[in-house]
Amino acid sequence: MERVEFCAIRRKLGKTQSQLAQLLGTSLKAVQSFEQGWRNVPVHIERQMFFLLAMKNSANTQPAPCWEVEKCPAATRERCPAWEFRCGNLCWFINGTICHGETRGDWSKKMEACRTCRVFGSVIKGLEG
Image (tube, rainbow, N blue to C red; front, side):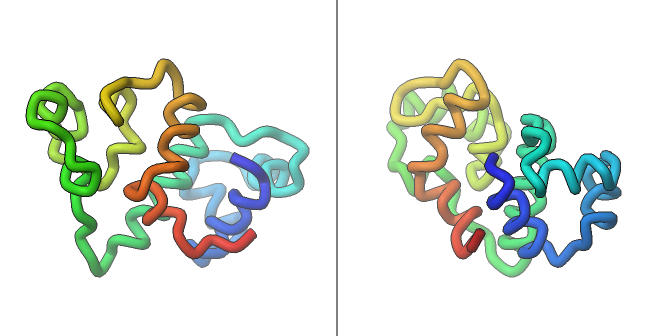
């Protein structure tokens, strides 16, 4: 996650740096460092930021699950953690999901694939840096 995206999500959430630090369980100095680009945003913070954004975005709507959006075959769907835990709108949040027939080895590879997906695209839609 780049600093510009981090800042955009904080603004979309309507939080001050201090409020966001509290939500993320980190220090104000860390949030300031992420926004200035002095420190890279750790994976656990990136995941929390996207999760909070997804919850804010879906407060009034229930997005279609990924297996419907991507038209996953039953055999694939039944092996996928997103299906197993019935969280198809949070598939990008869960490691080990089977997207386009394969799993991704780590978070960065997963997010690379997710950023081209319509399900995750609906989470970050409307973010301006």
